[in-house]
Structures are given as structure tokens and as C-alpha cells.
Image (cartoon, rainbow, N blue to C red; front, top):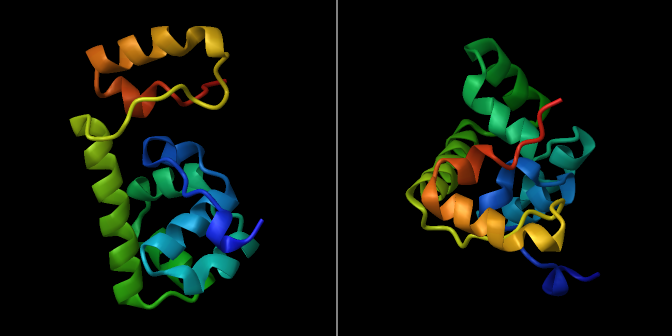
Amino acid sequence: MSKDKEKSPEPLDFFIWTVEDVGLWLEEINLGGYRQIFKENGINGEYLEGMSMFTTEQILRFIRKCHMKWGDFITLCKELRRIKVACLKGEQKVRRPWWAPSCLSMVFVKASKRNRQSRVVSLKLEP
């Protein structure tokens, strides 16, 4: 599939993004130069979600591992925050998660409209 035909990942689902989804998103936010290094390091949506809990040491390790400029890391964090806030405010389109059967579409949409925060946390699969 060519870059032009690749569909951007849904922001609502950022924590279940694949490595490829993260790469597409990096292109969207003008950080496409990091696409390959993120792929090589297996940076997916779950990893990005966990970054909010990183210690200073972990942040510095991430920046070194991905050879990021400090300003680019700040941009990455701002864009992640923008997506999270939009999800919590209900500004993202509600849709059925990729893993849910189609028969549950209406149930999911109704539940997520009732509780906006569930739109962010309910998609996580806990063991």
C-alpha cells in the first residue's frame, strides 16, 4: 500500500495503535523522520499511552533510544495530550473497536456516549 493510500489511525483508539499506525501518526504531526526508528524499537500505542507514567530517567532513555531532538519530544507529548483531551471531551467520533463483534456496535456507542471517560479506558483489554 502506498503512503497516499494509507489511512490515518483513529485518534480515539491511539492506545491500541500498531507500530504502523504510530508511523502514520508521526507523519501527520510532522515527525515522520522518526517513523523508522520507532518501528525498529516497537513503539506502539500501548507504549505511547504508558509514557505519561515515565520517570525522568525513562524519558531520557526514550529520547536517546529514538535519537530524538528535545523539541521533537515536546511536540510528540503535546500531540499525545491533544488526542487524550479530545477523547475525554468527546470530540472524537465514537466507533466500534476493531476487536469488538459488529453485533455490539450499538451497545458500545451508547455506553461510550453516556460515559466519555469510558471511551478512553474501556477499550483496554485487561488480563
